[in-house]
Image (cartoon, rainbow, N blue to C red):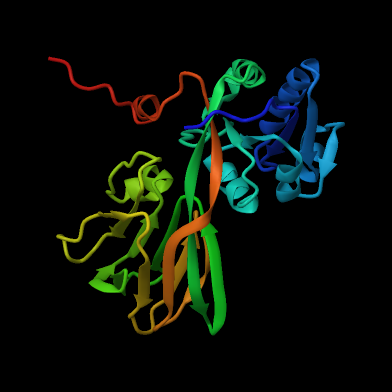
Length: 294
């Protein structure tokens, strides 16, 4: 965690146009920020969604370059998309949850007033989160994707298992026969990897996690490796549809012999943590960890 090095003067508002409830929450945020005498900026889509009369930028990347902080309204998927689109800008982001679970969107919509008060008072810290990059070739063309949560290689419509060969830092690990393989960042450990039986990892841990999806060999379990590791996944299956996905979004179909290299990106994402917030508290609230009573 680190302290911000400047006072917030320009707030960037970024909303999910597919969530109708965003509009009223964004308007409320704009009123609170304007009342405090700070500048408000948004991208074109958000300005239209909420009817804002603010400074307008063409897209999320331009907005990140203009603003001191981004308030992202939606669910975790909205924040994931914003992180990928603004990667490299290093503008801190705070997610306002309009969705349901919300591991990344730290502020519930009914806590908006308190959150903005904390921001205006400088009562927050910044946490740097690692991104992943997936590199390789698909259908003879270069492949380059950035992920905040995870990179997934999985079977298509066919119900047969696919076969994937995995190397770590050049060393053979295994050949998985499975429905797929998840390679996730520490942040992504509470997403698809968790649902597939992976471990919960503190988001600041210097590790990557490999989690096979429904492996044929029952001893194939989730594996934790150093964050500096270079993971190579080669498609071995013959005549089976194999899909590459990044943060839940399909990035294309892979063929036999295609190889994807996954590693830590040089780019990072800065997330805002308000005073009093913690990952342990998030686990207790989101996963309903209450312990047992006798």
